[in-house]
Image (cartoon, rainbow, N blue to C red; front, side):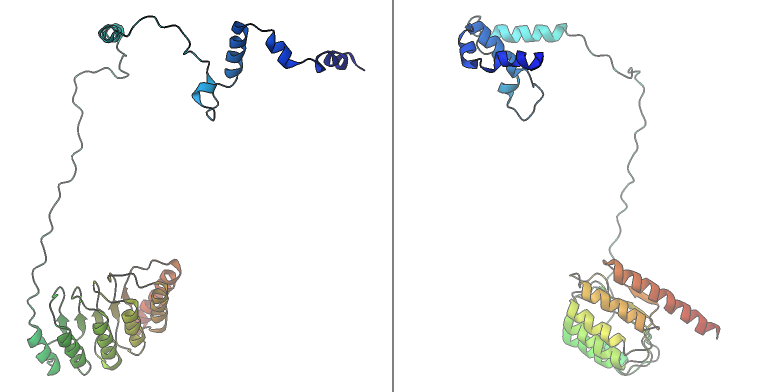
Length: 276
């Protein structure tokens, strides 16, 4: 047995409780303080276990609130002020002024007479090449439906816009039926309406049967149409080379990339056709 092991044998049978009983109260308090101060930075322990108990001091006298306030005030007056890192010179710094807000005036009301436009569309007026009903929010659904019906056989109108007309799926279905028969329309804009994914799907499927439409804008409906509709949009652009402008902000990377590639191809094909 080594000398170290012999030294350990001396303390193996020592009774710790017996040793503690031989310590005086002062020695026990000192031992407790030393044990408690072994890990003062351990934040997992409560504050009472990270520092020694200092609440057993005898009181120095009754609380004198006025004397305490005077003492604190005197201490505050005697503390020297901290020197500023940058001395104050009285110089005024330049303040960056924000850009002044320039109010944007509201768009003037659309003066289009719906009944007159409907008559001209039905009569196939050759002077009428654009129908713009944007921002007219009180158009009756039956009148819009009749307008789409009249558009089926019209051969002169090139642009048809129904932006912010509160149009829903019934109008979307009427537009889809119109696209299946009309062969002169080039630009269709139905943005900022209340068309659901079902209505958008109907329009997109009808676009596949139309070879003259070059621009389609369907963005900013009341609700997001969903992944399936975005995939259908990309497919339509891929399968319809006549579409060279498409208005919609894709939220999914996959259909966005497909649509961008197809749009580039469609525009290249259009430039080649013009050269010929």
